[in-house]
Amino acid sequence: MIKESSIYIGKVIHKRFKPKIHFFKYKVFSILLDLSDINLLDRSLKIFSHNKFNIISFYDLDHGPRDGTSLKEWVIKNLIENKINTEEIKIKLLCYPRIFGYVFNPLSVFFIYNKNSELISILYEVKNTFGEQHTYIFKINENDNLIKNTCKKKFHVSPFIEMNCTYFFKIRKPDNKISLIIDQYDDEGKLLYASQDGNRIDLNNKNLILSYLRHPLMTFKIIAAIHFEAFKLWIKGIKFVKKKLNIKNNISLEN
Image 1 (cartoon, helix red, strand yellow):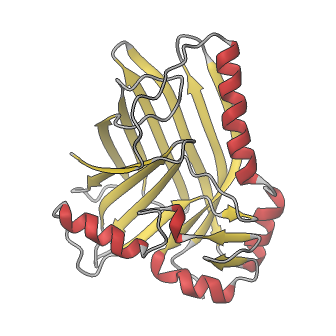
Image 2 (cartoon, helix red, strand yellow):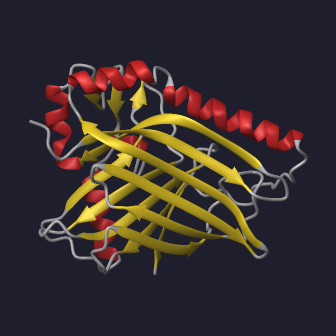
């Protein structure tokens, strides 16, 4: 029986505050995968496969080192380098799955738990549409349900937002619900609000099929929506910010 992995049904919201108001939202479903469950999921779920094509699938090369090698080993390596305890840890990843072989994850989140099921680290894995990725690693020292993290923006994401910004992350530990909020500020105040929420359901054949039927081409719609919203920002006259650096896959330890 699958106990540590689950599905979350919810929505994504984006709101830009300046220089002009811009708002959109769309429905999504995410999967929270315990990385030690992957082989069980592959055996138990008819429309789910690991590193193989299916209606729903999960590929290691979509995350971490992006080369198909072990995600667990990649996480452990980075935790050790950043002096975070790796003894008997549990690693869970919140992300969108591939649908018919395609996915784009603007943000994926690794939750790292110790042997006492206490959250000890969060890795925010951010991607852009240029195929690049940056992972922000945070140590977690307090076992609160609401985790707050702050860092300087180090990675070009939107062509309509400057690099000189600060992220304020607020995330609840995954339970019956998930809630992730990112407030982005520049030197003149709040620029952007982004959030993802969802309600938990069991990860089983029935729920996975229903999630797919309710969001049949979700991953294709996400990338289409990103480009469509970018077009509307351009129409509104928002300044285009050219990407200055090519960053394939960087990592930073944050306070």
